[in-house]
Image 1: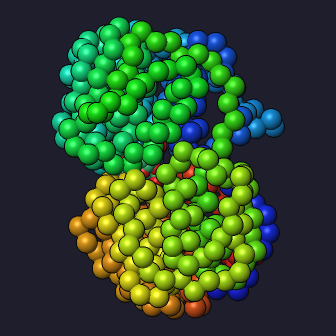
Image 2 (image 1 turned 120 degrees about the horizontal axis):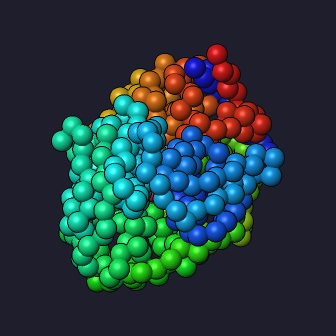
Length: 427
Ligand SMILES: O=C(O)C1=C[C@@H](OP(=O)(O)O)[C@@H](O)[C@H](O)C1
Ligand SMILES: C=C(OP(=O)(O)O)C(=O)O
């Protein structure tokens, strides 16, 4: 567990951890390319290592070079896995590899993961694959993992899928469909949520030489394309940086967060505009963010349709802001590692927060002061990190259980926070 104590000053320069979303796509894309790709500054987080494991099981030859901080991927050929593929806690891996697994030469691939992953929705993707003549189904017949995928040739030039459950289904189709002989139209039957993650997919797929157009109804993926091997440097992660930025604006500080690019496609770059709108005048440079001073924040309304992963961070900021913060359009935030709307409401209330759960979001009335409490984090990395920030600002001591979960996306979170002066102890 983490023992987090009120901290009065944060100071120093840190590097944002590498992007989780880009690392997943880089390693899976490299596996699909013929020849050798090199991924520099990859995220050594458990979720991305799940993608490495999944690709290896499906035939990739991947060398992880810790000293040089790079992954060397030799791809191009898929094989039938000789065991079930356990992808741990990573939704991104499960969703993308379900489609890719259909391209094994024969037989079946079985993808499964931990308790949380075996509750997350897969049915819309399974239905979409069926339209393309790919057989993939839930072993329990309830739309969740374990997922059994049969080797098969893609057949069809049109696929309909809803856009409001997970953008990862669409990313998954985008990564599969270049292997179709024909061009394929992806038609969205409901409005797309988490759209910036699709922009990230399009961005990195273009580096692999894959051409996809946006259309009025969705996307057009050209057929008969080949992934080409690349050398790729992974940029810093704005979702992970959101905890540093939030801590910085709540506590008197002078911190610089490097490796965050102003022209990034990551939707969670919105954390900058959010804290600015709440009244924190942070500085944004071409490749870093500087948080200096201490701010009195005001509550704001935030549409989280495209930024689901920022919800725990915004909820914590809202607790300390003057007036009301309303988070809305976040039904999909309930479908993550846990129901994050419920978890934020239940746990932050233990610290004295005035927070109300809505079907699609949260209403938070700022109380200025929270008090330390013992918090459950439901094995969810984002809750560990957001609640740590709350603990640094709260009176007294906050006990955060399940801190190991940070290994998913920000393995050295505690070390980085301590390096800038955060009063955190691991017990
Ligand atoms: O594609 C990605 O890299 C991700 C997409 C988002 O999920 P949804 O598209 O399911 O909202 C996000 O929450 C997740 O952390 C990472
Ligand atoms: C939801 C997340 O990731 P995934 O969907 O890959 O499990 C996350 O990192 O917050």
